[in-house]
Image (cartoon, rainbow, N blue to C red; front, side, top):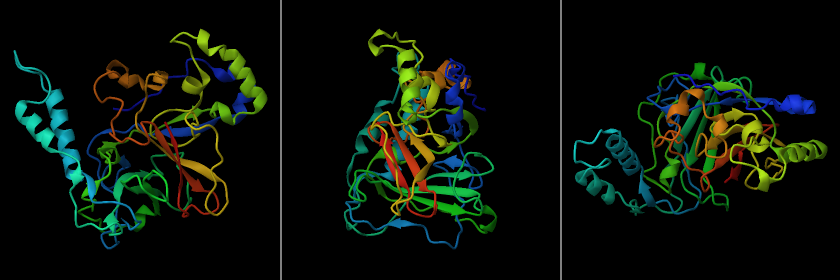
Length: 338
């Protein structure tokens, strides 16, 4: 099923014509549970990885044997999905059976890989891959048509509380035999770092900058147009939530700065960066429901509808991944917005 973002509830450029020069397109990825192939753009799917190329690993010092088994995360999700999709028999309560409950309670965090030392190499976990043919707003080197994103699923890297993200750019035509079995770490620091397998339905839409990125005069006029926050009703259309930055997984466009406030993101080499991809905990929430695709509105409040990837970044927000303008092979920079 394709996904369609409705027109914005207000044509903000009609009210503020000078906003038009700041517009930019972004590609909403619309991940949904599925079974992608290595040749597909996906989240949590198999990568188009050469069979003769070593899989990347993390060797940075941090605890890596304690957490949740990757296999347990997937088992728990499968049990819960099956349990809540069943129509209960008369007299039976919905959800997991007693037997399923016993299994779920047995899937606990712990030191499941006690022999792993703090610098032993562990395989990175595949997060997503995007083909330029599917994602018109994909940045990066023009002579590479495939971006692959992996991370080390522990919050303990570079002296910060965040995963270690690796970007790989490829020419897909140069990949011969594809790796049949994709390595994974035995243990993850958080189940929210294990993406569910999702196909994508990319859709290009127009965005406007986060209000903190606008010129002072324009920002002040928009603030005055919105009025006093205390006087707004729950159906009020707001620039930040409804008319500027699209929520959910996307490529290109603008980053939201609603959590931390505006910040300049520079590469380690000192050059400015551009937004590459936004990884999101949810596709929409109560504050930006106008962005809910038309096809999802009837089930927008159903269990799990707005969290198709089951990824959680930060406290439950988004992770903006920036890449270097001068050299896209430099390590990415991250910004988390709660």
